[in-house]
Length: 163
Image 1 (tube, rainbow, N blue to C red):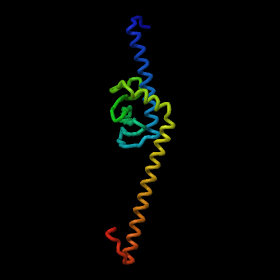
Image 2: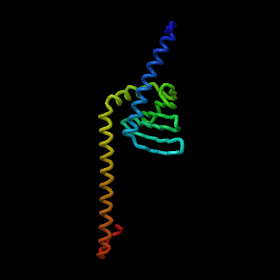
Image 3: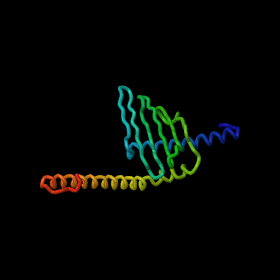
Image 4: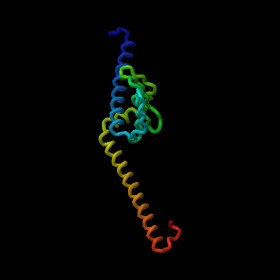
């Protein structure tokens, strides 16, 4: 145990930050792999690189995982389109390197997101489903329009430039 009060205080801060970073990292990785959109995948002879993204409220979570057999992972958190958190680690979180850890309103908001994630992801999923449904409806309407124009043309009806 350290006797210097400044070193004890630093040790306490290091331990607190380490626990927080690990909590954030475990959460983000789990959420990205389960709920995120895979935006890139490459499989080489000795490595795989997979990238995921997930928009959740004011946050954009991004991850790039497994560049080599030994790991190599990057996790990014953007809050209101500004990068507020970035961590790199090779094989395990014990030796991670925090490249960005902004102070500010993002952290309490992110902790709230972690706490309420089931409700947040339900809203995100509903929004995605509604968007897909609207796109599907537009596609159906467009297909019906095309078929109608084909029938009209075949029957010799004017289409008033609709073709």
